[in-house]
Image (cartoon, rainbow, N blue to C red; front, side, top):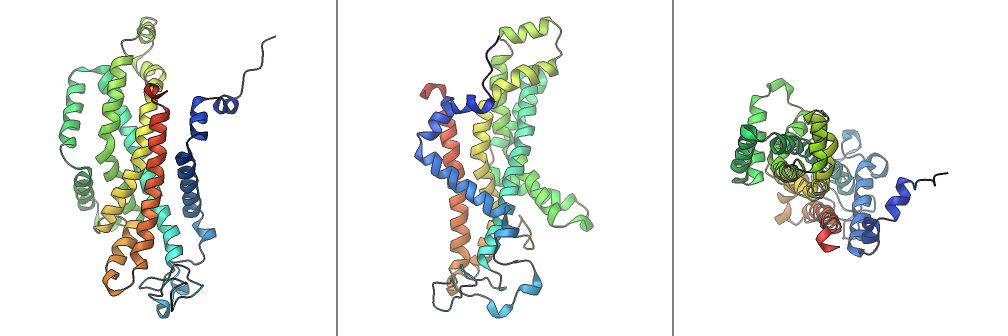
Length: 309
């Protein structure tokens, strides 16, 4: 009688990755902060003390109130209010959700595009490989933020005027950030594919008649996902910062669906008049979110690096 095979959870608990996580306090703290911020952002409709987008519940008489512990503040608005009387804490929760959605969606799209092009480039080679890599080289010569600005501007110009709305603007933003960041995935997967395609198990699959697309998906891709996951984890923070930068410049998320970058842009107009909380709290939330995700990415990179084992 064959012994029972350990479950996936049992294998994970016994893995080196879990051991490394348990013995890395920075990774534990970063993951706790990230999870709390994700819960707070996606649970905003339940956790937010106010509805910042309900015009019936907003009063201009409550505009620019300081935080509750400052003279003139109210306990109803723990982190104060903005120039429209919206609760800063509630707007932070909703704004973090937009930033996270844009960051995760753009990284996922960039990963799918980059992995696909990298697989095709590395496995098929030839002119296709030369063309994709030359496009990647040209794109790497420009900062990602400039590429995102260019793509965002061109897309908004080409789209019909009547189709402009909040979700369309967010979709354009996600696409522009993804198209600015696919190169890292493509070059990484191409390098792994060039190594894997000449190994014995790939040659054996070719001999028995397995189609190239099946070889790429079943054999080559699984052996290239480790570095891709590390890049994706680190790129989430970069994508959130890019979104915040574009929103700060006024070409990102529309004001009707504010993100952290939009809040910082709005608060910057009142910074020198003494309403510091309109910039400090969104800026602190952005720094905390990006730092925690970056620390998780650094830990994952070290944990999956065989040279450091």
